[in-house]
Image (tube, rainbow, N blue to C red):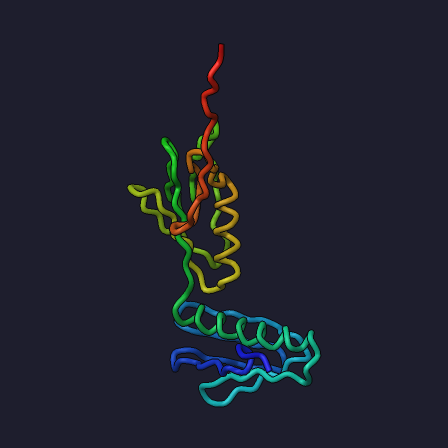
Length: 182
């Protein structure tokens, strides 16, 4: 049996869960999420605990078992606490600022890059340290938006300039070595 799949999901008292077959709706202080799950997985709700059961030990059902439980847990954590990722903008002349709800980034291009805030995502900017905090209730969306912002100017290996995750280690390469000539 899946070690992750057999763990119960504890639901805090501030979170309301509605189960309708394979459709789950979770509502909490930070927001609301809804998701459809695979028909093979059986989801049971008892008071403040959600359990996921699988019909048999087929490889597909084993994989879906752990995945379904993790997705449900992320929904509950998202609406109660929320998720966030921090990005650092590194480089001389690279700047970030908040314009309304959208991000305005100076990333060494001839023009500023405007990144509009998707629904359900909030940005916080510390312009002194060039940090961007991406916040939201959907873990998948927070990660996707962070990856899209990072892809605007990925960190390069020679000087380390670009947009990177805050605790990301960039593997640095040595530059050209001087060659002794005649």
